[in-house]
Every structure is written in structure tokens, then in C-alpha cells.
Amino acid sequence: MSRARDLIELDLPFHVNGTLDAEARAELDAWLETDELLHAEAASLAIIRDEMQAEEVRSPGEFGLARLMRDVGREGAGGGAVQAPSRTWIWQAAAAVAVIGFLAQAVLMRDQAAPQGYELASAGVPGALVVAFAPLATEESIRSLLVGQGLEIVAGPSALGLYRLDVIEGGDLEAASAALRAAADIVESVENAEN
Amino acid sequence: MSEDHHFLVQQIAKGDKQALAALYRAYERPCYKFIVSRLNDPHEAADILHEVFMDIWRVAASFEGRSQVRTWIFGIAYRKVIDVHRKRGRVTVTDEVPETGDVAEAADAGYAAKQEAEHLAFCMGTLSDDHRSAVSLAFYEDMTCAEIAEIAGVPEGTIKSRLHHAKKLLLHCLSGRIKGRAVA
Image (cartoon, rainbow over all chains, first blue to last red; front, top):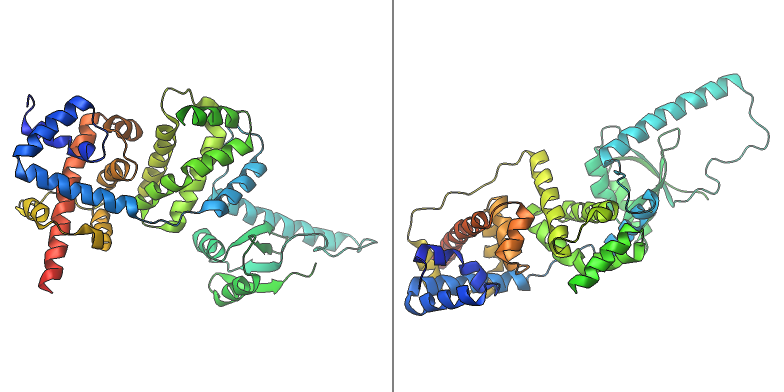
């Protein structure tokens, strides 16, 4: 018992989790034999540790991996120091693109006749739902809604500010669609895509 | 195991997505558990976990192998959660250890914590992020004091001190809740 009790006591959590070296463990073991309070604290910490280790947590699992692979694929090869734009930045950029697109379309419609061989804007575009988000909806509320319903944005915004969504594999499109319609403060309109 | 994970990080640095998937499968669950224990928000924790592995993908080439892969990954997660707390402007919670004899009482009570998961979750939630992180790494992950100190970027003595205070606060909180329930 070469160290003072106060110092020994600081090692108690590491005695409980089994990471103390042999010398420190032996020193603490000697104290535990004679100090009832220390012994009781060690027992309580052991119960807390057991409880924490037994705790079940539902992690993102394979869904998280699919999301990771998708985003890594978008970003390109690894090892670079490329910083992905933040979500906020993405939404600001998306809004800017929507405005520019709208202006460009207005100019085209004013200056040009309709081109020959006109094609539906949705032709060949992925996505099962076409939605418009409410102007005051925050990125956080949109994200929470989409993640909660297993949806992802696969295209958009269009010049009119429309986004195309798909359910992540295994998701329920009908339920997700109903949830979007019910979230009137976040989603302004929901239509089934006509591909 | 550790050498395997070093190899995976080297492969990730070369752009190997399968290596990233393997590393994700190895650490996704414990890392998420650590993050969610500090945020109490599963959706936000999932986003932070995603950001951690995106960072791993981006900076794998800078991993020099001087620390363990596990410590490196948890270090990234540790700092990400601190950023979240800073953005929230969150000021937490209990840091003062009450001057009572409840530590001994709680210990003596042998409070059958196996049935008291909700009490433990509640009491963990009353700790500051520093205290909660230290407890999570020590008891979820069974990390050494040196590993926790490396992740948090503080001396080992600071970690021991944080755990000491966290222990007192936890036992005090648990004692109060269990006594309250017994009275009710």
C-alpha cells in the first residue's frame, strides 16, 4: 500500500473495467480487502458497467453503410483533403440554382419559340415522388422527415424548385408518401412521379 | 485485430471503398453508442457517425499509425460531438458534487441496478459532456486511462479526476432516485 487512499481511489474505474496493470491492480486489491466503502463503490461501479454494456442500441447499421457508400461515391476517390460542403451550404446552393434556373427559363421563354422535339422534363429522371418544400421549412426539419421515412433526394431542385425523392431500398413508398402529405408545414406539395 | 485495422486504413487511403465498409462494420456500433450517449438524439447521432466515417475516408492518408485505429476513430467522434454542443450553445449540467453521505448509502444499498436501466440513463443525462464521455469510454469500451486521455486530448490525471467526480455524481443521483421510488 505505497500510495495514499485518495490516489488509489482514482484508479477504481480502471480496476472495474480490467485495464489496470498488475502492480496497480494488486495495490488496489489490497485496499479493497480492508476498506468497506471502497469495496462497496467498486461493486456499484461494476453494476453500472454491466448495465451499460448490456444496453441495446439500434445503430444505423447497413442503412448507414449504404448512405456512406453513396456519399463516398459522389465525392470521388479517397485520401484527398476535399471537404464536403455542409448540408446548409448544399441547401443554399440548391436555392441559388433554383433561382438562376427560373430566371434562365423565363428569358428563354421570352426570347425563343418552343424548340422542335420537345421532351418532358421528367423523362428518364429518377424518383418516385415529386415534392415542393414549404418556403419556411428548415433544412433540419426536412432532413428529419426524410430520414424518418427512409427517403432520399435523388434529383432536384428543378427550375421550379421541385425535388424528386425515392424510398431507400426496403422502404414503404405509400407510407412515406402519406407522411409527406401529413407534414403540411414542411412539404407544400407531393405528387407521384410520372416516369 | 489492431494490425488488420491499420491495414484497412492504409487501403482506405488508396481509395478502397470495401476497406471503408469493413472498418465501418467493425466500429459503427461502438462508435454510434458513444456518440448517442453524449447527444441523446438518435437522428443527430446517426448524422455524426456518418460524418466521422466521411472524415475517415477523406483523411485516411494522414493517419500515421502512431495511435490505435480505435483511438483515432473515437477521437474524431469525440471532437465532432463537441462541435455539436458548441453549435447548440449548450451549457451542461451538473458539475457540483453534493456534500452528502449518499455515496456510501448508494453503495450500501446495492441498488439492484440490473432493473434500474432507466435510472442509469437518466443519471448519465445529468452529467456534463466531459464526465459522460469519460464514463462512456471507460465502461462501454473498457478503454485504458491513457486511451481516454488521448481521445479527449487531456492528461491522464484529468481523466481520473473526471471519472472520480462522475462516479460521485452518478451514485448520488442513483441513490436519490431509488430512495424516491422506495418512498413512493
